Image (cartoon, rainbow, N blue to C red; front, side, top):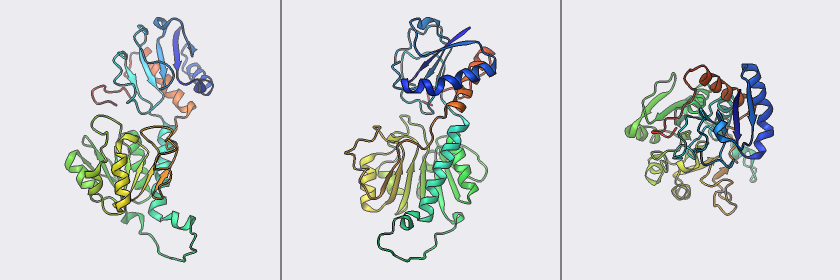
Length: 310
């Protein structure tokens, strides 16, 4: 019988215990699921989320894989004590949640909905937006979440540009990569969606120089990682009008401190890291599938490349 340690903030245990046990039973895997142990050497798998109290993986000498509940692994991937295989979370719930959040906020800015929802001057201004096919939207990051978000925007009729560090080819999306590709995408897009992982190469990617490449009035939407954007550079770009609005779901410090200027800024929308929450039922199925794969000596899903950081 295998032992699975659930290492996450205590509030997560009652959310995940039943779905994990159900998924294990359905897969026919006999396992002890625990949220604490005095015998780390007997643990076969760790289900992990940050802030659960686990930072030293050295005692887990028998652990066969660490299975993250989060899509982002920047907080753990550089841990020198983590020598076991690490898998990040990619599941249908995450993908569907991100698709809906991105589509909703792109449509909000494309249609100019704020002017109609909040109209204190009672202006009657029947100015129609362009059709989606005439609006260029860029998605930076074409991994699992970027692909589903970009695909949804294509389905709505938008002219979608994609950018990734390495070459991609996706139906309906004009894909670009590398430094030259980033210039091409950012100089053309009217709405920019950030769905990149946070690595040494992507931290502060959206800085003063790259903000200046964007057409005046560009909308920036970030459900990826807070540190993709230089906050001070963004505030300056908002003040100059280079960026027309920023809708931000992720931040360098979370919760976003009460004194942060983003809260009161008239051109910033703050959402509390809700673009795509891990759903216990669907996440449990992914976790158990990876356990089944290890037991069957099959390749792991969503295995993290330590050199790339994701």
